[in-house]
Length: 219
View 1 (cartoon, helix red, strand yellow):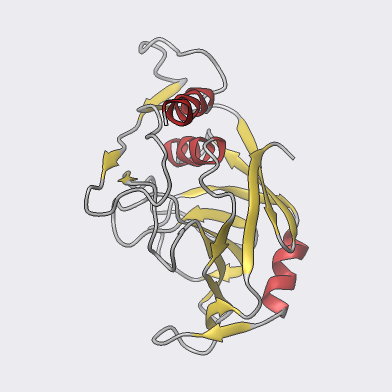
View 2 (cartoon, rainbow, N blue to C red):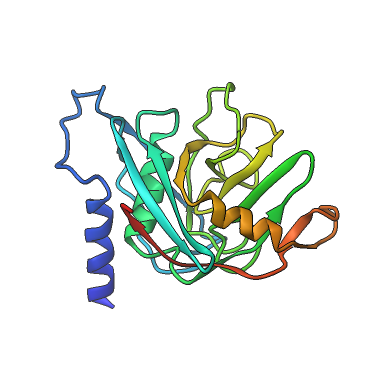
């Protein structure tokens, strides 16, 4: 137990990838607020990220699906540095490894793959939440990766990748974009969807299970 939590702490510290920056360097870091959710405890043992995030540069994350690898480039300099910091922390702590993506949609309003929930759709988060980081001008074209949520300020581990487009309000923090592997997601969509009520016939579980075998930094 002590070793596991020790390694987790190292992972969170490593999420910044650089030494701590003095508070006076406001252009380099921003404060983040990660609030425990006792009513929704962590689905897997993780520690909360440090309460500040870098605002410069990008970081690549590769999700190795059973369909093939998908690499996303997360933008620390964008509107959602705390969300980027959070995803890096969860990746380093292996939160997403051996998990399943429970939702796939392909309607005229929403074409996304949703992942990050350990138990089922919108159930099984990291045991904490953090605020939305949106400007109101967000759009969600093909290749966008953004945070999923269950309402304002409920971000945790859930995220979605847009495979076509998402005609949705600008309520979801944008992390970055897919830089390789969209063909793997297209293959998931081509395999079909098992519709679930009340989402409609083009929204539900992937017809063939989609699993994240491993998530890691880099390509």
